[in-house]
Structures are given as structure tokens and as C-alpha cells.
Amino acid sequence: MWRAGFKWIFLIIGATVGAGYASGRELWQFFGHESGLAIVLFALFFTVCTAVIMYVSYQQQSSQYLPVLQVIVGKRLTKFYDFTIFFYLYSVTAIMIAGSGATIQAFNFPYWLGIVIIVVALILIFLKGINQLIVLNQLMMPLLMIGLLFVLILFVKDQNLEIFSDWLEQSNWVAAFPFTALNILPLIAVLGAIGNQIKSKQEIVVASVGSGLILGIVSYIYNSSLIQISDQILVYEIPLFAILSNYSIEILLVMSFLLWIAIYTTAGSNMLGIITRIQGMIKLPVGMLATITVLSMLPITIIGFSALVQYIYPIYAVLNLYVLTRLLLFPLWLKLEERR
Image 1 (cartoon, one colour):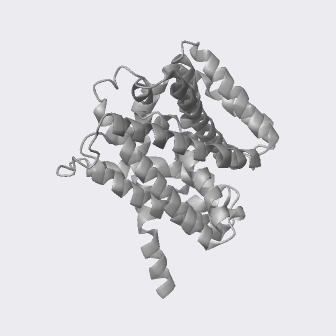
Image 2 (image 1 turned 90 degrees about the horizontal axis):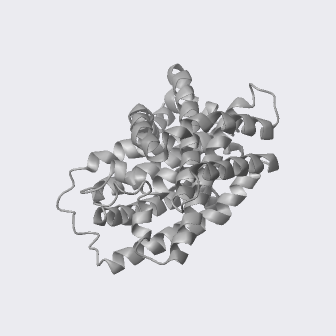
């Protein structure tokens, strides 16, 4: 139970912690000053939503997200949110590809080189099979979260930050709703694809509580650190590099590698949702579907990483507020149905 639960924790974190989150750009977009309560609410909402999605996937024994989506939003809105999820996965994968370019560019290498590297890596992992993605998440996500926590705690200590000092003012608590709404779409897509691999309800409890706690703690410390360097964030396309600029080149290189892995695993998780959805409609090998899909995204990456995060993420956050409401109220609906 515990082993399987941790396997899903890493898949969930891999789907959530991509270029936008790990770079700090997404957190700063929604949180910032006076957001401690918002982050606590996000952790609670995320835990409930993850548990509901996994439970529905387990009940449906699904291998793609459409049956799960139908249960969550109802038959009338399934087509609309099917399109929304698919377009979300498609555009966010393009953002991840742009994030790879931005990461490589920070070391004065060409932007296009980072894009070529991740495109080739994505095609290769799908040529080897979907299970390789789960294995990669199990290996790399613990390293990423440990590395990120290490750097953030080191920064908090070095800067003598009082991370619980701003709790008197919590005017931004409402941000918990759009931020959670933004992050549940990839969960429906990814967890809907592995419903037939979940063996027990205990796995669901471990995975949902564990992932919610980890993301809540990291988000809180990360946001507190970003507040400290708020005057520098406009200069950096990737805010994490503003924090890393205080440390040695070795730490910078290791964290840049882990950031790239976060970008890669999120892009891979999103691709998993895309490919499992279209496999039933287009009879092509997984590797060929992955190649066609990734290559078609390249024109979008011209817009640039920070611009894509700035404009696309808020749109999806608003569109998904209805899905968030359905997920948060789902346990109540379930109890009402059981009483009937």
C-alpha cells in the first residue's frame, strides 16, 4: 500500500511541478504577499481534489481521462471540458518546451538548443513505453523536491527570513481557488490514464494526503523566498535563478538540471494524457503519435516562456473553477447518493 501510494505521489507531483511551478513563475503569478492562508487552502483543496479524481479513476478502472471527466462534470459538459483539458495539455506541454529553452538560455546557450533537447527526449521516452514515464517520476521527483527544499531552506536561513511573520494580513486568500483550479486539469488527465493500475483505496489516501502536504510545504517556503527577492523577479525569466544567484555554480548547475527534469516530467505527463486520449481515434503507434504531437507544438514556443505563463495560466484557472467546485463538493454528493 505505502509503496504504491508513494509511486502515485511522485506521478502527481511530476504532473504538477513543471516549468511554471518549479521556476517560481507560476507561484508568483498567483500568490506573493499576504498569501499564507491561500497556500494552506490550496494544500487542502488539492488533497481533496486528488483523492476524488483517484477514487473515480479507481471506480471506473479507466485507462484514459474521458470516463473520469464524465463522472466529475456530468454528461452535458463533458465535451466542453474534454476540449478544454486537451487544449490545456497541448498548450502547457508547449510551455514546458519553451521552459526548457529558457533554462538552457540562462547559461548563454541558444534558446532553440533547449527546445531540441526536450523534443528528442520526449519522443524517446514514448518510444520506450508509457511505464518509463512512471519510473522516471519515481526516480527524479524525490531528488527535485529535496533539492528545491534544500535551496529554499538555505536561502531562508541565510536571509534570516521570518516566514510566518505576515499572517496578520491575508488579503490574497482567494488566490487558492484559481491556483488549485489550474493544477487539477493535468491531474484528471494523468490520473484518469492510470485508474486501472490503482489497486486499493489505501493507495488513494496515501497519494492524495502525501502530495497535498509536500506541495503545500514547498509552496509556502518558496513563496516566502520569492517575496524577499520581489524587486528582482522582473529581471529574471525564471525567478528561481534570482535565488540561486546567491550560491555557488555547483548548486546552480544541480538545481538547473533538476528544474529541467521537472519540465521534462511534466511535459511527459501531459503527453501521456494527450496520447491516451487520441489513441482510440487515431490508430498509430505511440512513438509516432508522440513525434507528430510534439513537432506540432513548436510554433507556440516562439512566444516565450514567461509570456505563455502570464497569459495562458490565468485563463485556464478561471475556466476550471467549475471543475474545482464539482470536485470539492463531490464527497457530499456521494454521501447523498448513498443515502438514496
